[in-house]
Length: 174
Image (cartoon, rainbow, N blue to C red; front, side, top):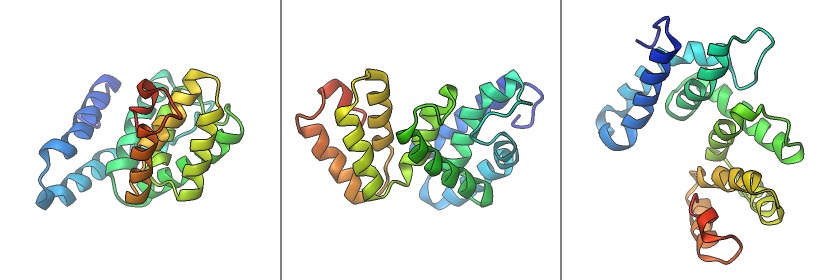
């Protein structure tokens, strides 16, 4: 199904796989799950990348966020690593220039890039969110912080939720 000619089936399979690991994949079979994701979706994710291309079809544009996010988060190997590096670079660029990421990909890129934040970039995003007046962009910044995986930064996220810097409805994404 992952290689089905229908974009709808590919996206459906990718979305179902993305939701399995957290709740249904036991630790002992996690490597098998990750190999499956990589085997099924690394090649299309590598072809799609995180940036649009002039040759993109509507199918490419519509499946890019789902497939690249799945491979970057759950896959292994060079394509997953490349997507994570590219997402980090795009996240830094987006902080300087909001047009650095295609609008269709902002949430996906920030989710991928947010996983690997270091303390300095976490602080830059946090400070940017504190001064951002546009609610949509502030939400995107806070969501990026919410994907962080480093334990020390997860703890800082909890501190932000308990502080008064943001409306609690906004900071709950952390």
